[in-house]
Amino acid sequence: MAKTILGLSAFYHDSAAALVQGGEILAAAQEERFSRKKHDPRFPARAVNYCLEEAFVEASDLDAVVFYDNPLATFDRVVENSIAVGARGREQFVKAATSILGNKVWVNEHVRRALGTLGREGRVLFAEHHMAHAASAFYPSPFESAAVLTLDGVGEWATTSLGAGRGNHVELFSEIDYPHSLGLLYSAVTYFCGFKVNSGEYKLMGLAPYGEPRFYDVMREHLIDVRDDGSYRLDTSYFGYLDGMVMTNDRFAALFGGPAREGESRITRREMDLAASVQKLTEEIVLKTARHLRKVTGERNLVMAGGVALNCVANGKLVAEGIFDNVWIQPAAGDAGGALGAALLANHMYFGEPRAVDAKGRDKQKGSYLGPRYSSDEVRAFLDRHGYPYTRIEGLAERAAVVAGHLAEGKIVGWLAGRMEFGPRALGARSILGDPRNKETQSVMNLKIKFRESFRPFAPSVLRERCADYFDLQCESPYMLLIAPVCASRRIAMDDRAFREGDDDMLAVLHQARSDVPAVTHVDYSARIQTVDAETHPEYRALLEAFERATGCGMLVNTSFNVRGEPIVCTPSDAYRCFMRTEMDLLVLEDCLVWRREQPRFDDAENWKETYELD
Image (cartoon, rainbow, N blue to C red):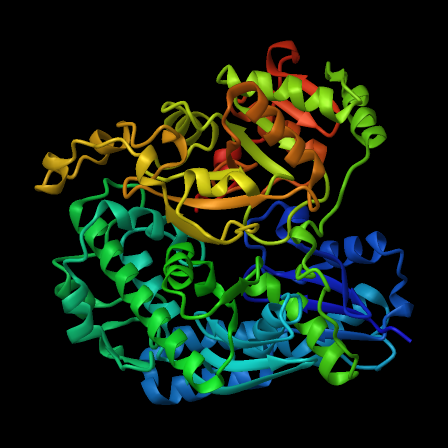
């Protein structure tokens, strides 16, 4: 009989729950989407409740509950680290030990209080952190067998793990351990450049194309020793995370010309070049590791997970190099995805359930649309209850045509349709949309909608069969995890001489059109691509098709439906509140269209800029 298994991640960041039955993923969601606290690390009680309700499963029906981490092994690392650094690490030890001893080792009690049961196993099962990542990457993948690569900050001890999956079995056979960590190196530079660790790394990736990798040689000489097989060691004397509460120390600052940038201050040439340098280093390590992994496993396919697997630039380079024939990356590659991996790991390796790949070569992630959906009745009940004016258009084709027409006129649209995405990317279920042909779209959406740094690029959602018309990408990218160049025929030459010769005014480059789809073309002529097919999200696909009929362009700007520091919206109420806090023109809630100009005065009881901590 098929096993029903609940996977959990919690108590570090991005807590989540996932429900698996017979190897099928029924539901998965991050706690932050319900609590409205970004990267919420607390026990995912709301996410658990959603998963059980979505699948009509009672807690008493659970065969097992699985946690994504081994708390005792993590505590072992904390203790050994503290012994190594001595009294200097007291503050860090107290904080880490309090978290582990106060929460993680009591996972059984948290589960018992939340569910009233520990499942039929009578106890919570524990996975190793990188095994949970590996399982999240391999089991939903479309491959019968594959090499496995997981990279993140740190699990219990492991920071990089190499392995293979075959059938229903995953094995990790090599690892790099803390304190040597590519993820922590990237986070250290993120911190030094004035961005927030565990949420600002994607900003650093977006900043890198503005710079030149002039610090690459310094990093290779002083910070990290990289070998031909991709293995590496850090010189930890430059970092602060072993014995303090910061990522870098005075030696690091001296190496790069002075103290770390203060958050929200002006970004200088130094930060741009640091970003370019650590990005180049990251790509080098990923490629060398992949070549080694191909050699030792002989596998044609690669699967990846862990926070570093969200580095879309490195992923794009990896695919372009052709080291593996096929690459599949877990959409929820960070800690949230560990909940899913833990559940799948228990299903296939603890209970021994067989695994079958899809006959048509599709993955089992279901487009990562694994969160809640709200019916038209629920949406209308919400709007009617509050007296918010709206227009209902029941027919999908007609609704798509109307929305596409407004997008073509330059309107910015908030879009809630279908089940919410699992993972950090908005994939057309909880998205803010715009016209990619309009060169003003990027600055308007950054400054008036998202309230974030103007340099940050936006991603395109493109009809799958039109992708090659716009981008140099020969494979699908349904989860927005690959960056690829814009086709040369679509590029427009930029005048960036002054910027490249030392003027660090990014706006002079940013405001130039770089292609005939300027809103999604970054300064290095790249884009982070989502390809959209007809099977996984029919509503979003219909909108893209309607926009193409209206404009000849089979693409839209797609960014997550939130403001800076806010989790992606979940409910119609979340979406309406975010809509009214910004300068979006139109809100689409399933089959209901809500126009800003028709709405009553919105009295927001909270100051969201104080409620949400800036990321």
